[in-house]
Image (cartoon, rainbow, N blue to C red; front, side):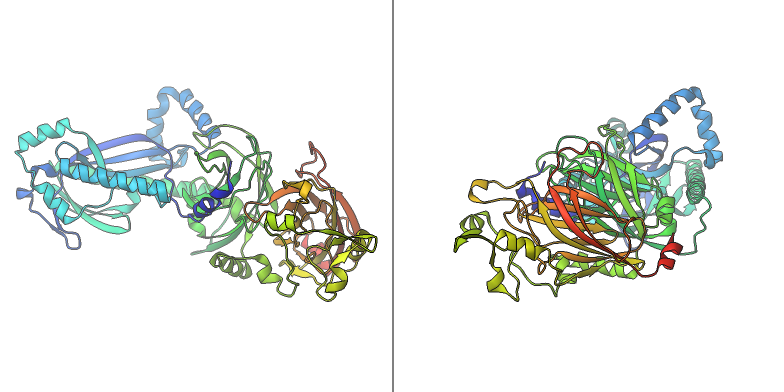
Length: 629
């Protein structure tokens, strides 16, 4: 559950979109080698302290560890566990067969190279390491910066290395200390970032990528046989790594043929969720690819059926190399999480969208069942609705401008010609302001959101009948939005009736501040706000008329009525889904719809008022429309 004071913190968290979250793994096999690790005299030049005068506390261990990546979803994890138990003693033989034929591997594997250090033999360096690691962990907890799975410690400076060299002891004494201390990984590097450069008898020179730096190190093994075996293990695991990756890629591609160097720009729309578990959650969505957080929406307060809008981060463009997309383990993961300002955010479930689905998706609306991630509470409730299509140049340009603008307002881009009308304000100002007066025996009401700019004196105060009459007049200006080319839908929001009151202080006239939002394909629009009114009328000179361009014949128009709140999230009053498929072109329809707090047919709950719309469909070409199907 959220609080208004936490909205700034939520916004800061939402901006961190490049967090790396390591996959959950279990160790499958480990091979360890004892080495001497000569002191590097220069990080830029390949200069090391001669092995004959290398301090005895420079003893290290290098391990080659194969980790099995566990399923990301609890359901898959349980299935995998049952399957593993049923195989019993066949696991060892299965491992051997998978090594020889990686096509049969049921789950991906990651191979790490770890350089281990002994705590007892290197007390100063251990203290420095733990101090730095603890400081880094605390900084990550506070700032949410990237936590790289394949790097567990930062490289030490030459001064620290020399400080350790002072602690030179006799070899026999040091071996005894090594047997007493604990071993910890100073470096942890994925095999794909580790290479053998040269081998000379007992010496193996390696390079590896560590936090953006290409490091070069020298391993001196106890025997030439150990050095040969280490090189053979690395070569074998690299071959298996390539074969496993190719097998997974072939399975993911299926019959798709990628062009060389093909890149994808996908416009991903996180539309809504329905029937979320727990009572009155504050849901938001996190999108991840290969464990990397690529997007995060804002949270919607107190809603089991949230709808994300552009302002809440529903849209984002994913630019990715097509080959990298298909090589991604698990596809695109979208997790729905309950925001909480004071405790841990709770996972409500997630969906996995395969690379093949993303590649072939053409903008249609799809609904996915939420499943529990591994280690999270199993609810088996809720759905997530998404739309994905190839991003056009216009989409990319629009999103770039939107992301650069900190104070972006959609009306600043599309509504410059509409009149600027005063809406909203503090509760105290609204209580002082009187919305009703008696004049010459007639009760008149203040016209909201404001009078007609061309008839300010005449339309500032009107009777109830006059307001009703004005509301039905043709709209003065239209907001033209969308990128479709099959036709246009003309929508006018005329009025709402019987809305619930969501504000406190109704005895003083502080009532719901209503506005209407419309979502249609790639279009989003919003009316002006009518303050303190449970049956608002939207005046023809206000922002209420929209031209929505059509790109799909079966698309529905989603309409939501909200209570405006300048200090926190707007509160949903009711919604309706409008089916446009049966409209006859060029005919004007006046339609009244009941509002409910969910778009599902059953159960719908109590009615939340009604809304009246004026609709008209205009087609560019009926032949073009038929061919599009």
